[in-house]
Image (cartoon, rainbow, N blue to C red; front, side, top):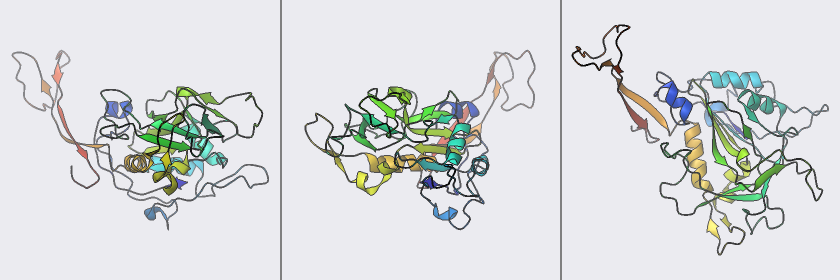
Length: 314
């Protein structure tokens, strides 16, 4: 599914911070105020399903209003997009081209299946091992706030059923929200032989849920399994291979957190005030002077931030 909403965002943070973590918005930026995509549906957060390849030439499309160029224009206009893929449907070439522009790669055949013969749901995928079970997302680094995992982890399991993995480039605006376990791999499910000749990627090379935050604050998230966002997996009980008992999935809470971040309901910072002054002994350290001299060695530059939360309070 492709969700293309129009939301109002809140301003906030420097470019350096934006490049380091998803969750920070550059100062002076606002969310999308209007857009021309799907004009009758966009304010209702339309979710048209991905079409299958039905064109005679094998090249699928999303129609004249969803070309890669128009989607990029939407992002450049500070639009936020949540894209969900599925291994059962070949991704349209328009979406593959869009992902390529963002330095996100799918398999050459535009589909794939992530399996793990060690971390799978023994209840629903005992044969094909295509429902991968993972721990709830953790912070990328100790100094980065975890926006997608539980505040106090208690061995929660995230179910990733029949999904498509992605590989990410080295762009500073890209970040994996969920990586595959080291024993997982992605292959073409049409290859039914006992031995898979060629793997797309394996282990930590695979990103299962990926995020991009553009310099204009627009957010783009790819969820490799549309099925993981369904009611079935919100309420499912899963049992890890070799596990003692079945437990509820973390999918419902994860769906709230990933959609909230995508549409700038969470992880948005506002600059309260900015101050700068000399920090030299004996100097007149007036706040926010209009000029500095070349020989001024040290400038103090304090900033104050606050975080926007979905209730509308900061």
